[in-house]
Image (cartoon, rainbow, N blue to C red; front, side, top):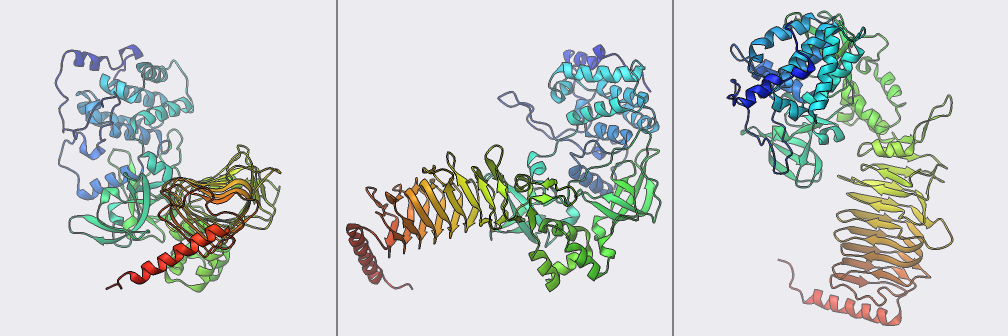
Length: 638
């Protein structure tokens, strides 16, 4: 191993080379990108796959290139797993050639071999990592670290380990330093990917019928869809859940949801990984981050001397998912007989086992690893459909042994995926510590008798596709709204909202711009106003009761449909509508003025309402007669 310099000399060669006006580092040219924006922020250059850097001989076969690109895309943020040599090689591969000195090209292959050979020595590994950091240019150091002092501190700790000034018998300090370098050097996954748990669709999976997610930057939201055709120009036709179709989606825009959120194992110092041979059963971490039963189909030497790769065939998965996995990557572990393989169970045992799962999310994940269960759902067999439809997650989840709450309502609402079915147990009283209960995605939340949210606000987000549902929940509030619909389409069915005190509370329900709400058979009592409708929002209230509210609906625009509702006294006015409001009020029973001193918007119609003052009743009858005459005078449709 070459001699390393102290912290004060780190990257000094790069500074000198810059000061002398040295030319660019020879090698393949990187894609052109903006190095700095007007505000001084930098744009990270595109990282090259290792197979494209410092190629001394002919290019590798396309199959190897596809494997490397697929693994790099799917594991870009899998830091902290695998052996230390494996992690060091990944760091070096992630560095663009323009970030290292020109002399590194001749040192690179030898350095990689030394890393593999030093698998059992923390001192040698620390020295090799320090040497890699020392080869960085001054521009790379200033770009990868927030300050030069942060880099110097990291390099100094590595220098102390490599020179023996600091003891690290179990490599705990070295692991921490390697993780810090990974954070700086490895390209981070897209924040949208981490939030929604998606990865790019592998080319082998891009076929007709594939379930995908596509992100639309203009709307800043994801849409689920299905690939319906593969076009000749290597784009794809995607049919989305809302009925829209896009006939030219490139492969780079197609993503798929993760099955789970598994992480690679962290191997000990000198641990080369599990001892597996051809034909052995194993448990492997799939690219979609689920630990699956697998079998070793073949073994070959890795790209570096002393490394090994295994061809993994996942049980119950098609051959297109087979992949070569490095033995020391942390993605492999020995198969344990006590690990259950669902596909091997008899049908009656499988259904009995799956009937014990708590929620539909668990059943969807089971279909990802169980060929028999997946086939039953696809064919629409009655027993599978009945089991899937009856799966609800009962909240809160309580440990039957000690009575401890394992999963609370707030945690479930924040983490449940769209479409999950949640049920609040009878008598559950929710009292959020911060008075906020957030539903992050469009779920179906059904409350049994006596379940209530006390002095809190229910915030509803998401609501894509079929939309979210809240049914049978009792909510009490006073100073804050009871329900706020922020985005998407939601339905409140059979809910009751009331003031927690004797006096009237504030507005009960607020519908934000762009959101849509349907109120079905709900009651709102003791509030200044039942609903506040913002411009660009939609509200449809059917068979609801507004009791002791100063006003029924206040709008700042948007679209309102009020049908077969009952407004009880005392109430000053039913509707306070902005002139931009559209919609209608039909067949409602009221005990006060419909508009009061407010003027009816031009785009808003009223008819068949009962209980209006005489003047309003006459005006409504006159408007109805004019509408009938206009309809009769209109020419018939062609």
